[in-house]
Length: 223
Image 1 (cartoon, one colour):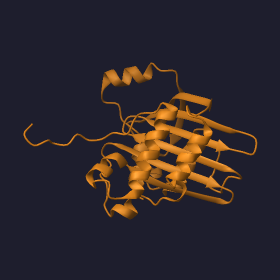
Image 2: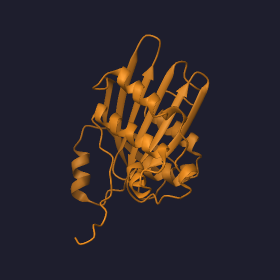
Image 3: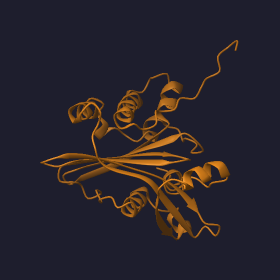
Image 4: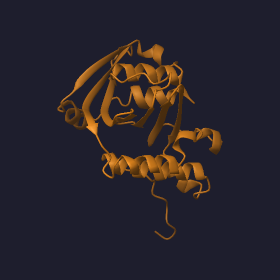
């Protein structure tokens, strides 16, 4: 997976040139985390970068596996990043959403993650059984990375990247789907893996009140 996707669209999600948008965000309640050596991090492997950012956000390291089940889903656009963590243990299931945006200083030697939402103890609107049913029905745990099935390189200049991290006992993997609903439309629903991701993300987003999947408007003849 191209490292630019992770480090530009997750860690350095935007540089605020729009003053009104910047002022609106800066007025939100926030917690600031400083990441030094910005230039060096751009060459990190995706696993290393995810681990570093997760640690900065105060999230548990799941890359060595998780004794029960853990799903971490990143919604990463050029504007904002939402990180949803679903943790299942023997005694309970819990959900957490962290939302943040970031800035890089003028010298590009450090960056700031500004957290404006950190909600714990969340539950899906339709209940945990429905969530796990959709997760299993759409084979989310076993899907490949989108690049391995579309044989194309996406231009990471817009849209939203969805990064799945899945951990079970002694096992961990991650994969990415960039603007899957757009890809689904472009490929006319030919790839079941993309269809499954879109179906799950649409359900998941409704359950936790997250932004809907974007679909690019297509030109209609005669209009």
